[in-house]
Image 1: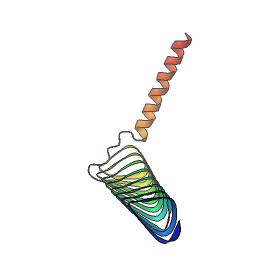
Image 2 (image 1 turned 90 degrees about the vertical axis):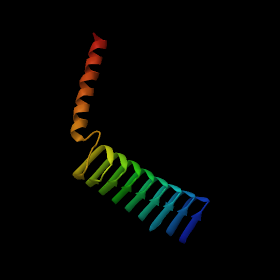
Image 3 (image 1 turned 90 degrees about the horizontal axis):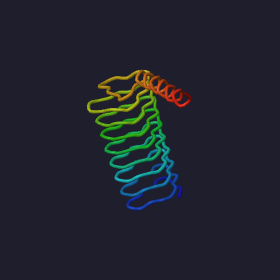
Image 4 (image 1 turned 60 degrees about the vertical axis):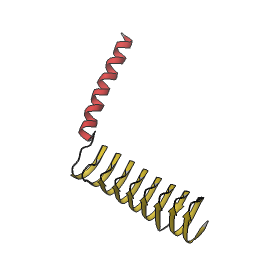
Length: 160
């Protein structure tokens, strides 16, 4: 389905392309648009200039600006990604802001972690705020070294 604007309410489409896509209590397999808004719905794969999700989910979000509130995303790729009380598996962006949310992996140029936020792994040129990663680059290096020594010892023990 293609058109200048598309509103999906309590229904769904396999794939859409439009100038503006708005999803309310519905779902779309794949969407491509300038602006995508999701409210209590979901999209499997979304590509746009601006993606805004409130109480919804997106599997793959690719946009210049991605903002999530009370939502979840599998992979967010963009210039600016903002997570407010939301979760993400992986975020790849220039600028990332997480407020009362969390992510498994964040790779960015600049990361701002606000109160009650966390990430398992953060790789960034600059990190600000209350950062409590479970594993940063130094921890990953140490973990890798420990695992390498452990695997080496186990291999040596099996040979001997």
